[in-house]
Length: 290
Image 1 (cartoon, one colour):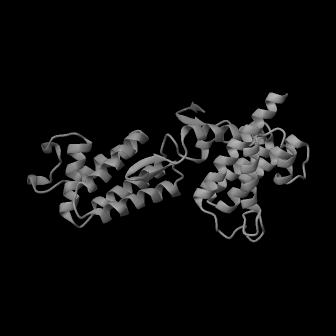
Image 2 (image 1 turned 90 degrees about the vertical axis):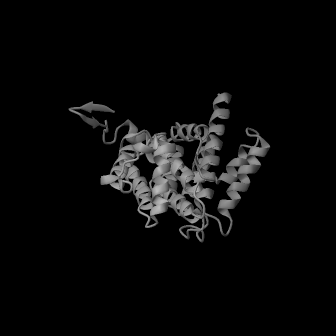
Image 3 (image 1 turned 90 degrees about the horizontal axis):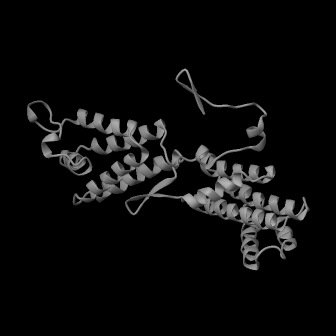
C-alpha cells in the first residue's frame, strides 16, 4: 500500500492478477496483530459501561487499581473532582479513551486483563467479572478478533504456526482449491455460516484430490482410495472419517444438514485448520514426486 497526499491508496485492477487468483490473507478477514477503530471503540464502551456502575465503592476501587497497578502511579496522581471530592470520572475516561485510540493492540489487551484482575481483587463482585468477560468476548466474536478471554487471560484462538498453514492454503497454485478455502474462511468469520464453512473446507480437500488423481468428478472418498499408495494410511483414515462426518444423513454436505445451523464455530474452525494441513500435505508430497 502506498500513501499519496496523505491518503493510503490500494492497488486494485478489476479482473487483475490478485482478483483472478482470489488472493486473500488471514489478516484481511481476522484481526490478529492490530485492532481497527470500530473494535477499539466497542471495547472502550465495555470498559465505560463497567465503570458507570452505580456502586461507587466498586467504581472507585477499580479506578484506584487502574492508576496504581496498571499505570504504576502514586495515589496522588489519581484525578480528583474540584476541591478533592471524589474521583474525576471525566478525566479518567479521557485517559482510558486515549489508550484505546492510540496504543498498540497489546497495550489494550494488557489493560483489559488488568481490569479483570482489578475486579478479582474485590470480594463479592464475581458476577461483574463474568459479565465483563462475556461482553469483551462478544466484541471479539462480532468483530472477528483472533482472541478470546479464557481463564481470565486473553488467548489467541489460531496460533502463528496455524496461520502460516492457512496462508499457504490460500495461496495454493490451484485456483479452485484456494477459492474453496477462501470461501470457508469468509463463511467462518465474516458470515458465521458454520455449516457451509465446513462444506467449503472439505471441498478444498476434495478439489485437490480430484486434481491430483485426474478424476474431476470423484468424491473425496473415491479420490482418497486412488491416492492410497501416495499418502500415509493413518492420514487417509483420518480424512475418510472426517468426510464421513460431513456426508452422513445428518452431515453438513447432506441436503438435510445444510442451512440448519447445527454446526458450531469450534467444529468449523477445526475443519478449517484440519483441511488446511491436509491440502498442504498433499501439495508437498506430490511436488516431491515430480
